[in-house]
Length: 260
Image 1: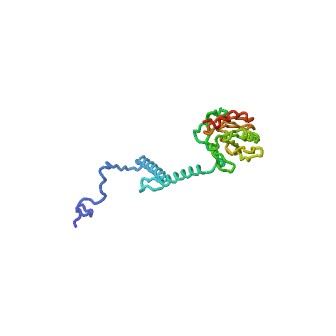
Image 2: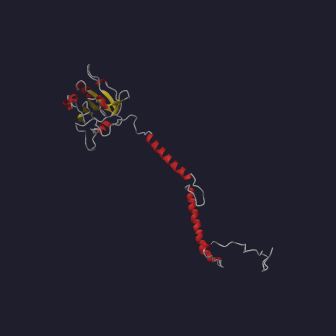
Image 3: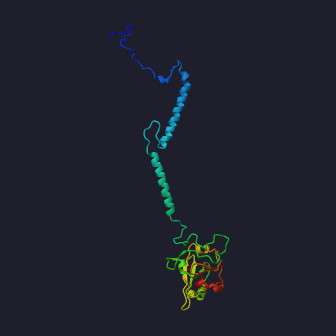
């Protein structure tokens, strides 16, 4: 093996085999004699590395891939699914959870039923409108549709001793017309409500939320009963917010059987 003619001991068989040349697209490389001249470039590189580290930290918390990581983890997808499931379960419990203010049986009125006044200032419902379709509680605790008892004289008896009014209504109504006593508390028939032989018997219904009185705008009553005369079709023939005697509605009783 021949050696180099300059006597450096390297084989004289081709070019120098040391570090390869730098890529041409790097451009001209200048290495300064004083490293302090690279302080500005070093500071900029450190700022970029810190910014990238913070960005990668946030992406890891959110389950996103970092610049040096492989495929994205499932953490973010699981987090979104967990939040959606929790919101769904919360809404379900809120809908089905029983409220302490919600009665077991309430008067259910059909939306848009004629006869329910929308004007808060109106003291009562005008005659010619319809009785709200309410489900009340009967004497045996079962639900009774109020419209199933028509035609009827409905007497709201909250806050009064109304045995005399009920007895007088039973005697005054024509055959085929029911007398219905409605109150917010369960009421048992009294001895004075028992009519003579051949007479009818009043029905006692409970309206726990006082929806009938509210729908008809009859007020609190102030110790006096209120009367509502309703035809077979549910038409309101007369409403008496404060009933004093059967004479307040006596003239309208024959219309209960003839009104459409």
